Length: 126
Image (cartoon, rainbow, N blue to C red; front, side, top):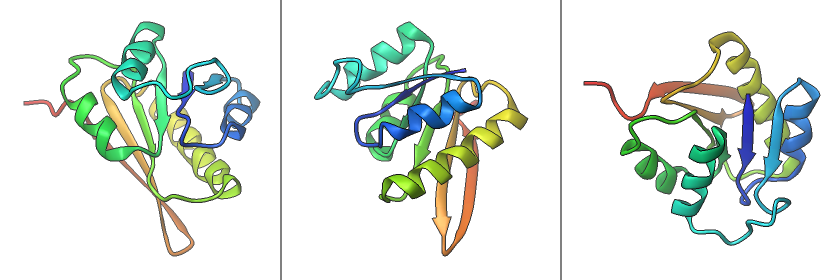
């Protein structure tokens, strides 16, 4: 899988993905810092990337109207880089079981010390 890490998350997540054999890029490191969300959406669509972000509300709204996308990973809590790495690793482990998350969202959260992962379709199938 190919991942694009949003600028709201640590660049360390690129290494987490690469260590398990995925391609990954950080928005800032590829010269796209400050891009509007719709520009990010177009870039991930053109490159067939799974977007990894902490910006849940904006990207849920944008992805809800996309007929086809490679997937969205949302790290819910606003946490430091060490915990971000742990949460993203949990997401990657889940994706290893699920396969390509086409038109799906994975939401990773912390409830106390426990990592929780929710998976749902977006756009919602009718």
